[in-house]
Structure formats: structure tokens, C-alpha cells
Image 1 (cartoon, rainbow, N blue to C red):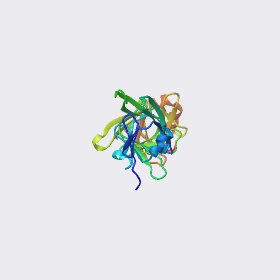
Image 2 (cartoon, rainbow, N blue to C red):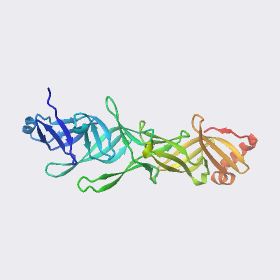
Image 3 (cartoon, one colour):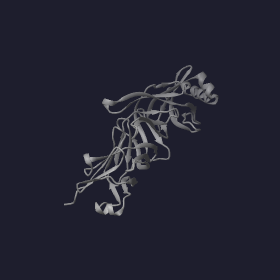
Image 4 (spheres, rainbow, N blue to C red):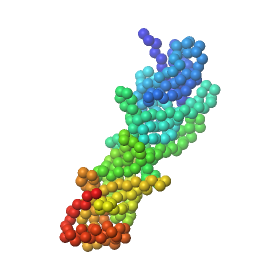
Length: 329
């Protein structure tokens, strides 16, 4: 019968090995290869031979993010069925989660290792942020349960707290996701990552303001984040400037800061509501209504784009005030 080795991690991220009735706390460092964590022993060959320890210990298991924003590796070969790795989340790219592991060695010295998990970002049915860790067999899901917000540059930011390993003081952290917004459905709001075909958030939302006056330059959505018992309800705001395309479609031009301007393009069905109002009912690429009505007064439309105003007036005369005139984008 093969002798069982038990691994665990203490609060200083030191690896503890129990074998032959003894407890060993070896010096070494963590590393990552193909989303598998390993520990490289920095111990003399004599000690490794004595306890029959390899130079590299693979710490396999299922990845999970606990409520304290610590990474867990779940497997029955660990004490309590899991290893708890205390981390500092550093950044999120379109295909990776980058984090730091602060290790305290046997001499009390601190060493920081920067590691990376590869995968893709998604949102779940509760509008929570998820990271899918890619593996050869089954992927693992890290669930970020806290609230996300939109910052001044209209990017998604995830806010959370961690505790310093030595002082135990609370540290406020933020994780920024760089991307841009798209509106493709009446009950979904999509956030697309830059330079990625895999990562995107599709949030379930409810339109807060179906009737929009373009001079205000804002679209509002109501969203709930989290499971039912912990759900946070809030209103999110998308700010932009309304413009016309060449074919009389509408463009919502959003400023993401640092000179980055991105457009949300819409087709529309135009209604001549009153003598002084024109309503653009927005539709998506497959002609489904988005529930958004952009209402232009004649005066504001003329100030915004005199040429477009004249084209619409000409169309209005030709249609005989017929509602439902479709203007493809």
C-alpha cells in the first residue's frame, strides 16, 4: 500500500508536508504550468532523499475562489480536502487572471511570486463575474461574488477587500476590466473585452428609461447582482452622445477615456409622433425591438444635424406622416 502524503498551506503560504509521521516545512517557491500549481523545493538532495520527496511537487485539484477571495485547490489528498492559497489579485487581461502569492520562508523573509491562470471571462445567471480556468479535461469556474461597478471611464470595476498577511489590516483593492459596451437585446447588456473572441459579459438587465431625450446623453438600466439572498439591486448609467449615420441610423458614441471613443450602432423604426417630435424606436441587426425610444424635437434635431433634419422632413412629407417608416442602418 502506497504511503499517504498530506499537504497543507499555513497562513504564510508555507507548504507543510506530513510524511512518515513527521511534519516538514520545506523552503521553495510556487510556480504555474498549464494552469497547474506546483511547488519547487529549495532543499538539499539529502533531505529530499530522506523523505523521498521530488524536486517538484505538483499540487493538482479543482480551482475555486472562496468568500475571502482566496484561491482554493480542492482534492482529497489535502488536509480538509483543499489547499487555501492566500493571494493578491493584481490584474485581469482578456484571457488571464494575474495574482501575487506572498510567501514567508523559514527565515521569516517575504517573497512575492507573480502567477497567472489562463482562461476566459463570463457572467453567470446572477450577473456575477466568473473566470473559467481552462484545463485539458474539465474547466473550473472562479466566482467573484462581490458587487461590480462602472467607473468614470465606463469600464467595469470589481471592488474587494483583502487582509495583509503580517498586520492583518484591511486593504481595498479593485480589478478593472477593459472593454466596451454593446446593446443587442431588450433585456441583455453586453460588455466585450478588447482583443478577445472568448471573453464577454452578458448581463441580464431591465431598461430603466425606455423613452430617451438625446440631449441628456444617458441610457439607464436596472440590474441585480448576486444570488437571491445576497442580491444587490442598482441602476447603471451609460453616457454618450447621439449621432446619425449616413443612412439615418443612430449611433451612441461613448467616451472610455484616454482618447478611446467607441460607437454602439442602431437601426431604427421612425415614428412622427407630434408636429414637433420624431421618435426613433431602436432595433437590433435582426430587426428585434430593443425597447428604447429616442425622442428628438424638431428644434434639437435641427441643432444637432441640419442636413439630417431636412432629409427626415422630406421623408415625412413623402410618407404622409405614416408611422412605422423603417430606416435601415
